[in-house]
Length: 335
Ligand code: TYM
Image 1 (tube, rainbow, N blue to C red):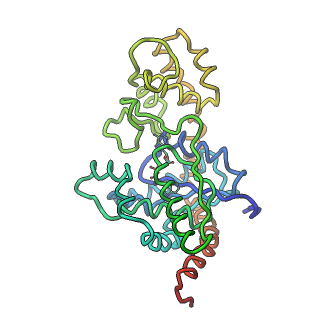
Image 2 (image 1 turned 60 degrees about the vertical axis):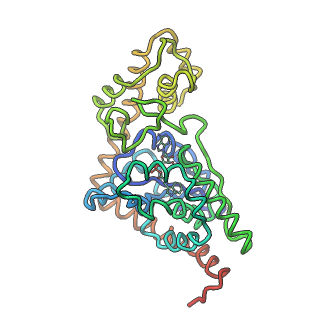
Image 3 (image 1 turned 120 degrees about the horizontal axis):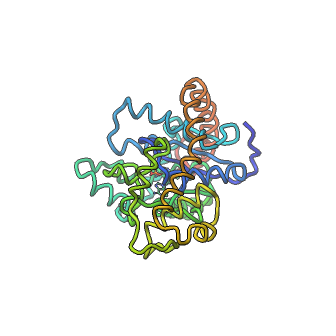
Protein backbone atom coordinates (compact mmCIF):
# COMPACT_ATOMS: atom_id res chain seq x y z
CA UNK A 1 0.00 0.00 0.00
CA UNK A 2 1.48 3.33 -1.06
CA UNK A 3 0.84 6.16 1.37
CA UNK A 4 3.23 9.07 1.52
CA UNK A 5 2.62 9.93 5.16
CA UNK A 6 2.67 13.60 4.16
CA UNK A 7 -0.92 13.96 3.07
CA UNK A 8 -3.64 15.19 5.38
CA UNK A 9 -5.95 12.53 6.78
CA UNK A 10 -9.52 12.07 5.56
CA UNK A 11 -11.96 9.77 7.36
CA UNK A 12 -15.52 8.79 6.60
CA UNK A 13 -17.85 5.84 7.01
CA UNK A 14 -21.19 4.31 6.14
CA UNK A 15 -23.28 1.89 8.18
CA UNK A 16 -23.42 -1.55 6.55
CA UNK A 17 -27.06 -1.91 7.49
CA UNK A 18 -28.51 -3.08 4.18
CA UNK A 19 -28.32 -2.01 0.59
CA UNK A 20 -26.59 1.30 0.06
CA UNK A 21 -28.69 4.03 -1.51
CA UNK A 22 -28.27 6.64 -4.19
CA UNK A 23 -28.21 9.15 -1.30
CA UNK A 24 -25.20 7.35 0.19
CA UNK A 25 -23.52 7.50 -3.20
CA UNK A 26 -24.14 11.14 -4.06
CA UNK A 27 -23.77 12.49 -0.50
CA UNK A 28 -20.73 10.41 0.42
CA UNK A 29 -19.18 7.74 -1.84
CA UNK A 30 -18.92 9.87 -5.00
CA UNK A 31 -16.97 12.53 -3.12
CA UNK A 32 -14.72 9.95 -1.52
CA UNK A 33 -13.84 8.67 -4.99
CA UNK A 34 -13.09 12.23 -6.11
CA UNK A 35 -10.99 13.02 -3.01
CA UNK A 36 -8.97 9.79 -2.86
CA UNK A 37 -5.38 10.42 -3.80
CA UNK A 38 -5.50 13.98 -2.52
CA UNK A 39 -5.65 12.81 1.12
CA UNK A 40 -4.52 9.86 3.17
CA UNK A 41 -7.99 8.30 3.25
CA UNK A 42 -9.62 5.91 5.67
CA UNK A 43 -13.02 4.63 4.61
CA UNK A 44 -14.73 2.57 7.24
CA UNK A 45 -17.75 0.30 7.29
CA UNK A 46 -19.04 1.40 10.66
CA UNK A 47 -20.44 -1.90 11.87
CA UNK A 48 -20.36 -0.93 15.56
CA UNK A 49 -22.73 1.95 14.82
CA UNK A 50 -25.01 -0.43 12.93
CA UNK A 51 -25.97 -2.45 16.01
CA UNK A 52 -27.69 0.58 17.56
CA UNK A 53 -30.66 -0.85 15.61
CA UNK A 54 -31.38 -4.59 15.89
CA UNK A 55 -29.79 -6.62 13.11
CA UNK A 56 -30.34 -10.19 12.05
CA UNK A 57 -26.82 -11.61 12.66
CA UNK A 58 -26.66 -13.59 9.41
CA UNK A 59 -27.91 -10.71 7.30
CA UNK A 60 -25.67 -8.24 9.10
CA UNK A 61 -22.64 -10.44 8.38
CA UNK A 62 -23.51 -10.53 4.66
CA UNK A 63 -24.36 -6.81 4.58
CA UNK A 64 -20.81 -5.99 5.68
CA UNK A 65 -19.37 -7.81 2.67
CA UNK A 66 -22.03 -6.33 0.38
CA UNK A 67 -21.14 -2.82 1.46
CA UNK A 68 -17.41 -3.50 1.09
CA UNK A 69 -17.99 -4.75 -2.46
CA UNK A 70 -19.97 -1.57 -3.21
CA UNK A 71 -17.14 0.62 -1.86
CA UNK A 72 -14.74 -1.10 -4.25
CA UNK A 73 -17.18 -1.26 -7.18
CA UNK A 74 -17.78 2.50 -7.19
CA UNK A 75 -14.04 3.04 -7.52
CA UNK A 76 -12.40 3.27 -4.11
CA UNK A 77 -8.93 1.82 -4.49
CA UNK A 78 -7.94 -0.51 -1.64
CA UNK A 79 -4.29 -0.19 -2.63
CA UNK A 80 -4.29 3.55 -1.99
CA UNK A 81 -6.89 3.88 0.79
CA UNK A 82 -7.48 2.11 4.06
CA UNK A 83 -10.86 0.39 3.73
CA UNK A 84 -11.85 -1.47 6.86
CA UNK A 85 -14.47 -2.60 9.34
CA UNK A 86 -14.71 -0.39 12.40
CA UNK A 87 -14.95 -3.42 14.73
CA UNK A 88 -11.54 -4.62 13.53
CA UNK A 89 -9.84 -1.64 15.18
CA UNK A 90 -10.34 -1.74 18.96
CA UNK A 91 -9.02 1.81 19.44
CA UNK A 92 -12.32 3.25 18.14
CA UNK A 93 -14.20 1.74 21.09
CA UNK A 94 -11.39 2.47 23.51
CA UNK A 95 -11.28 6.14 22.60
CA UNK A 96 -15.09 6.32 22.55
CA UNK A 97 -15.15 5.35 26.22
CA UNK A 98 -12.71 8.11 27.10
CA UNK A 99 -14.63 10.67 25.04
CA UNK A 100 -17.89 9.63 26.73
CA UNK A 101 -16.39 11.23 29.81
CA UNK A 102 -15.89 14.50 27.90
CA UNK A 103 -19.27 14.68 26.16
CA UNK A 104 -22.31 16.11 27.91
CA UNK A 105 -25.77 14.63 28.14
CA UNK A 106 -27.16 18.05 27.27
CA UNK A 107 -25.32 18.26 23.95
CA UNK A 108 -26.15 14.68 22.97
CA UNK A 109 -29.79 15.40 23.75
CA UNK A 110 -29.74 18.09 21.09
CA UNK A 111 -28.79 15.69 18.28
CA UNK A 112 -31.64 15.70 15.77
CA UNK A 113 -30.81 12.21 14.52
CA UNK A 114 -31.14 10.84 18.07
CA UNK A 115 -34.52 12.53 18.40
CA UNK A 116 -35.71 11.21 15.02
CA UNK A 117 -34.46 7.68 15.62
CA UNK A 118 -35.92 7.53 19.15
CA UNK A 119 -39.24 8.71 17.77
CA UNK A 120 -39.20 5.96 15.12
CA UNK A 121 -37.97 3.14 17.40
CA UNK A 122 -39.78 3.75 20.66
CA UNK A 123 -39.24 0.15 21.81
CA UNK A 124 -35.44 0.32 21.44
CA UNK A 125 -34.07 3.67 22.56
CA UNK A 126 -30.79 2.14 23.71
CA UNK A 127 -27.83 3.93 25.26
CA UNK A 128 -25.75 3.17 22.15
CA UNK A 129 -28.14 5.23 20.08
CA UNK A 130 -27.65 8.10 22.49
CA UNK A 131 -23.84 7.94 22.62
CA UNK A 132 -23.57 7.17 18.89
CA UNK A 133 -22.06 10.62 18.08
CA UNK A 134 -19.30 9.98 20.64
CA UNK A 135 -18.25 6.79 18.87
CA UNK A 136 -18.36 8.78 15.64
CA UNK A 137 -16.12 11.42 17.23
CA UNK A 138 -13.71 8.66 18.24
CA UNK A 139 -13.69 7.28 14.66
CA UNK A 140 -12.66 10.69 13.41
CA UNK A 141 -10.29 11.86 16.15
CA UNK A 142 -8.32 8.62 16.57
CA UNK A 143 -6.64 9.21 13.17
CA UNK A 144 -5.97 12.96 13.55
CA UNK A 145 -8.46 13.49 10.72
CA UNK A 146 -8.56 16.85 8.93
CA UNK A 147 -11.49 16.30 6.60
CA UNK A 148 -14.77 14.41 6.99
CA UNK A 149 -16.81 14.17 3.77
CA UNK A 150 -20.45 13.43 4.62
CA UNK A 151 -23.98 14.31 3.61
CA UNK A 152 -25.81 17.19 5.27
CA UNK A 153 -27.52 14.93 7.84
CA UNK A 154 -24.16 14.20 9.50
CA UNK A 155 -23.09 17.82 9.93
CA UNK A 156 -24.26 18.05 13.53
CA UNK A 157 -22.29 14.91 14.41
CA UNK A 158 -19.07 16.29 12.93
CA UNK A 159 -19.65 19.50 14.86
CA UNK A 160 -19.87 17.61 18.14
CA UNK A 161 -16.63 15.80 17.23
CA UNK A 162 -15.04 19.23 16.80
CA UNK A 163 -16.46 20.45 20.12
CA UNK A 164 -15.16 17.40 21.97
CA UNK A 165 -11.72 17.76 20.35
CA UNK A 166 -11.50 21.44 21.32
CA UNK A 167 -12.69 20.72 24.87
CA UNK A 168 -10.10 17.96 25.30
CA UNK A 169 -7.31 20.05 23.77
CA UNK A 170 -8.14 22.96 26.09
CA UNK A 171 -7.65 20.68 29.06
CA UNK A 172 -4.63 18.64 27.96
CA UNK A 173 -2.86 20.42 25.08
CA UNK A 174 -2.97 19.76 21.35
CA UNK A 175 -3.90 16.09 21.46
CA UNK A 176 -6.45 16.04 18.63
CA UNK A 177 -6.61 17.60 15.19
CA UNK A 178 -9.87 19.54 14.94
CA UNK A 179 -11.64 18.15 11.86
CA UNK A 180 -13.48 20.07 9.13
CA UNK A 181 -16.69 18.84 7.58
CA UNK A 182 -16.92 18.54 3.79
CA UNK A 183 -20.23 18.57 1.93
CA UNK A 184 -20.51 18.17 -1.83
CA UNK A 185 -21.46 21.45 -3.56
CA UNK A 186 -24.50 19.65 -4.94
CA UNK A 187 -26.31 16.61 -3.52
CA UNK A 188 -25.50 16.86 0.19
CA UNK A 189 -29.15 15.96 0.74
CA UNK A 190 -30.79 13.70 -1.82
CA UNK A 191 -34.50 13.61 -1.18
CA UNK A 192 -37.12 10.87 -1.13
CA UNK A 193 -38.68 10.28 -4.55
CA UNK A 194 -42.08 10.10 -2.91
CA UNK A 195 -41.78 13.04 -0.49
CA UNK A 196 -39.12 15.36 -1.89
CA UNK A 197 -39.05 17.48 1.25
CA UNK A 198 -37.76 14.48 3.23
CA UNK A 199 -34.32 12.83 3.03
CA UNK A 200 -33.93 9.69 0.90
CA UNK A 201 -33.33 6.96 3.44
CA UNK A 202 -32.43 3.26 3.53
CA UNK A 203 -35.23 2.50 5.92
CA UNK A 204 -38.14 4.31 4.28
CA UNK A 205 -41.40 2.33 4.57
CA UNK A 206 -42.31 3.30 1.02
CA UNK A 207 -40.20 1.15 -1.32
CA UNK A 208 -40.65 3.69 -4.13
CA UNK A 209 -39.03 6.47 -2.12
CA UNK A 210 -35.46 5.19 -2.30
CA UNK A 211 -33.19 4.04 -5.10
CA UNK A 212 -30.69 1.40 -4.08
CA UNK A 213 -27.40 1.11 -5.92
CA UNK A 214 -28.11 -2.53 -6.66
CA UNK A 215 -31.67 -2.00 -7.95
CA UNK A 216 -32.26 -3.53 -11.38
CA UNK A 217 -32.80 -1.20 -14.37
CA UNK A 218 -36.55 -2.03 -14.41
CA UNK A 219 -36.95 -1.19 -10.75
CA UNK A 220 -35.05 2.08 -11.20
CA UNK A 221 -37.15 3.07 -14.21
CA UNK A 222 -40.35 2.30 -12.30
CA UNK A 223 -39.35 4.21 -9.21
CA UNK A 224 -38.47 7.23 -11.31
CA UNK A 225 -41.67 7.02 -13.31
CA UNK A 226 -43.57 7.23 -10.03
CA UNK A 227 -41.41 10.01 -8.56
CA UNK A 228 -43.49 12.82 -7.12
CA UNK A 229 -42.97 16.10 -8.95
CA UNK A 230 -44.28 19.60 -8.37
CA UNK A 231 -47.12 21.75 -9.61
CA UNK A 232 -46.58 23.54 -12.93
CA UNK A 233 -44.59 22.07 -15.79
CA UNK A 234 -41.46 24.17 -16.09
CA UNK A 235 -38.12 22.63 -15.29
CA UNK A 236 -35.83 24.73 -13.13
CA UNK A 237 -33.73 24.44 -9.97
CA UNK A 238 -35.60 25.78 -6.92
CA UNK A 239 -35.42 23.78 -3.70
CA UNK A 240 -38.28 25.65 -2.07
CA UNK A 241 -40.85 25.80 -4.86
CA UNK A 242 -39.77 22.84 -6.99
CA UNK A 243 -38.35 20.27 -4.55
CA UNK A 244 -39.22 17.25 -6.71
CA UNK A 245 -37.78 18.66 -9.93
CA UNK A 246 -34.74 20.02 -8.08
CA UNK A 247 -34.05 16.59 -6.63
CA UNK A 248 -34.25 14.98 -10.08
CA UNK A 249 -31.94 17.62 -11.55
CA UNK A 250 -29.49 17.07 -8.70
CA UNK A 251 -29.43 13.32 -9.30
CA UNK A 252 -28.99 13.86 -13.03
CA UNK A 253 -26.13 16.31 -12.48
CA UNK A 254 -24.39 13.94 -10.06
CA UNK A 255 -24.48 10.90 -12.32
CA UNK A 256 -23.57 12.76 -15.53
CA UNK A 257 -21.11 15.26 -14.00
CA UNK A 258 -22.86 17.96 -16.03
CA UNK A 259 -23.78 21.34 -14.60
CA UNK A 260 -27.35 21.97 -13.48
CA UNK A 261 -27.50 25.03 -15.76
CA UNK A 262 -26.69 22.92 -18.82
CA UNK A 263 -29.19 20.28 -17.85
CA UNK A 264 -31.91 22.86 -17.27
CA UNK A 265 -31.40 24.36 -20.71
CA UNK A 266 -31.26 20.88 -22.28
CA UNK A 267 -34.52 19.84 -20.61
CA UNK A 268 -36.33 23.15 -21.05
CA UNK A 269 -39.88 22.77 -22.37
CA UNK A 270 -39.72 18.96 -22.37
CA UNK A 271 -41.99 18.32 -19.39
CA UNK A 272 -41.61 16.25 -16.25
CA UNK A 273 -42.10 12.91 -17.99
CA UNK A 274 -39.04 13.47 -20.18
CA UNK A 275 -37.00 14.63 -17.19
CA UNK A 276 -37.86 11.46 -15.29
CA UNK A 277 -36.97 9.22 -18.23
CA UNK A 278 -33.69 11.11 -18.76
CA UNK A 279 -32.76 10.57 -15.10
CA UNK A 280 -33.69 6.88 -15.34
CA UNK A 281 -31.69 6.39 -18.53
CA UNK A 282 -28.53 8.11 -17.32
CA UNK A 283 -28.68 6.56 -13.86
CA UNK A 284 -29.10 3.06 -15.27
CA UNK A 285 -26.22 3.71 -17.65
CA UNK A 286 -24.07 4.93 -14.78
CA UNK A 287 -24.92 2.00 -12.50
CA UNK A 288 -24.53 -0.75 -15.09
CA UNK A 289 -20.71 -1.11 -14.87
CA UNK A 290 -20.81 -0.54 -11.10
CA UNK A 291 -23.21 -3.47 -10.73
CA UNK A 292 -21.08 -5.70 -12.97
CA UNK A 293 -17.97 -4.95 -10.89
CA UNK A 294 -19.98 -5.43 -7.72
CA UNK A 295 -21.02 -8.96 -8.75
CA UNK A 296 -17.45 -9.95 -9.59
CA UNK A 297 -16.09 -8.59 -6.32
CA UNK A 298 -18.89 -10.03 -4.21
CA UNK A 299 -18.17 -13.49 -5.58
CA UNK A 300 -14.54 -13.24 -4.57
CA UNK A 301 -14.72 -13.68 -0.83
CA UNK A 302 -11.01 -14.47 -0.57
CA UNK A 303 -10.13 -11.14 -2.14
CA UNK A 304 -12.58 -9.20 0.07
CA UNK A 305 -11.17 -10.87 3.18
CA UNK A 306 -7.63 -10.06 2.08
CA UNK A 307 -8.52 -6.36 1.69
CA UNK A 308 -10.14 -6.32 5.14
CA UNK A 309 -7.19 -8.02 6.76
CA UNK A 310 -4.52 -5.85 5.18
CA UNK A 311 -6.35 -2.59 5.79
CA UNK A 312 -7.33 -3.47 9.36
CA UNK A 313 -3.67 -4.03 10.13
CA UNK A 314 -2.80 -0.59 8.81
CA UNK A 315 -5.72 1.09 10.62
CA UNK A 316 -4.72 -0.57 13.91
CA UNK A 317 -1.18 0.79 13.47
CA UNK A 318 -2.43 4.27 12.61
CA UNK A 319 -4.76 4.36 15.60
CA UNK A 320 -2.17 3.55 18.23
CA UNK A 321 -0.23 6.84 18.61
CA UNK A 322 -3.36 8.88 19.39
CA UNK A 323 -4.68 6.34 21.89
CA UNK A 324 -1.29 6.19 23.57
CA UNK A 325 -1.11 9.97 23.80
CA UNK A 326 -4.65 10.23 25.20
CA UNK A 327 -3.89 7.66 27.93
CA UNK A 328 -0.62 9.44 28.70
CA UNK A 329 -2.08 12.92 29.11
CA UNK A 330 -4.85 11.52 31.30
CA UNK A 331 -2.29 9.86 33.61
CA UNK A 332 -3.06 6.21 32.94
CA UNK A 333 -0.25 3.87 33.99
CA UNK A 334 1.39 2.27 30.95
CA UNK A 335 2.38 -1.39 30.77
P1 TYM B 1 -25.07 6.71 7.23
O1 TYM B 1 -24.66 5.27 7.13
O2 TYM B 1 -26.45 7.02 7.66
O3 TYM B 1 -24.84 7.42 5.83
C1 TYM B 1 -23.59 7.33 5.17
C2 TYM B 1 -23.29 8.57 4.38
O4 TYM B 1 -24.29 8.80 3.39
C3 TYM B 1 -24.82 10.12 3.54
N1 TYM B 1 -26.24 10.09 3.16
C4 TYM B 1 -26.79 10.99 2.32
N2 TYM B 1 -26.28 12.02 1.66
C5 TYM B 1 -27.10 12.75 0.86
N3 TYM B 1 -28.43 12.47 0.74
C6 TYM B 1 -28.99 11.43 1.40
N4 TYM B 1 -30.28 11.17 1.26
C7 TYM B 1 -28.16 10.64 2.24
N5 TYM B 1 -28.38 9.55 3.02
C8 TYM B 1 -27.19 9.26 3.58
C9 TYM B 1 -24.63 10.46 5.00
O5 TYM B 1 -24.64 11.84 5.22
C10 TYM B 1 -23.28 9.83 5.27
O6 TYM B 1 -22.24 10.67 4.84
N6 TYM B 1 -22.96 8.23 11.42
C11 TYM B 1 -22.71 7.99 10.05
C12 TYM B 1 -21.57 7.04 9.77
C13 TYM B 1 -20.32 7.37 10.51
C14 TYM B 1 -19.36 8.33 10.12
C15 TYM B 1 -18.34 8.25 11.10
C16 TYM B 1 -19.30 9.24 9.08
C17 TYM B 1 -19.87 6.76 11.62
N7 TYM B 1 -18.64 7.30 12.01
C18 TYM B 1 -17.24 9.12 11.04
C19 TYM B 1 -18.17 10.08 9.02
C20 TYM B 1 -17.17 10.02 10.00
C21 TYM B 1 -23.95 7.39 9.43
O7 TYM B 1 -24.75 6.77 10.07
O8 TYM B 1 -24.03 7.54 8.11
